[in-house]
Length: 326
Image (cartoon, rainbow, N blue to C red; front, side, top):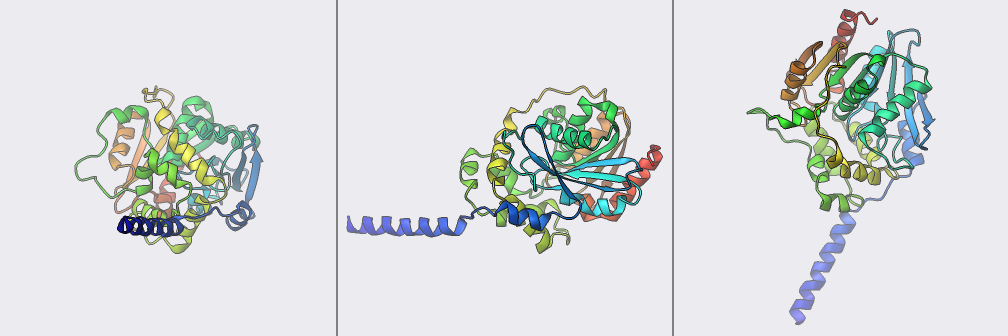
């Protein structure tokens, strides 16, 4: 009995030490907002009380490009493109609900429709009627969902390593040889047991692994980039919002969508080494959309706009010029 008590006491000590090591509290929103906003940052309060962080940059007299980030990212992912585009275009970017400096929303609605509604709220607030709409990863899904609902507003789509159409899920996605080490955070967040603990865990090492994997070990994954993802992830309220968002993934419709509205020019851009959404999805988009241009970048991962900003931005500019958008 004495040995058992000692063993239990040692286990308790180990658990306490482990909990102390793994636990990480929130960062105050004021600290994070000050660090990751700039002179271009603006905030729009939507009807549901969400305070949306957005930026409206470039030449207001030129065509508008609206850019939507991916899951666990923020509008900062577009900064390399914005610097290139803003001399010749008006560029609008935003943080979606549960992300960036928008963070948690009063109604706790982090559904796909809430993301679409956020895009609409920003462009409506800025009196923008028509625009080029582009998105990376989950933001690509927001792009095609928005376009399905309001195709008359979208002059062209930019799908950058985009999440696929629902009908793609019915088909094999990863081709032979495409298996890569994907970001662990997405696998773990699909598990209810992990989501229960995630509110209290320090996500730093998951951020490092996820970014190196998603960016194909690109040198753009600096300490500064890691800190940005990490600190935005633990901004006050953001972890609960992220957990809620992942909890709702299973409720998304898997019914095929009608692709008829997708008759506008579409540029499909993909990193051949994407470990999150394989390049076979790009081929599915190309086979499905009637008016598309496909560009695949060798040795590039999930974020061409950051990994190879000059080259990928040049492809966008050439595509828009060929579509008569200039």
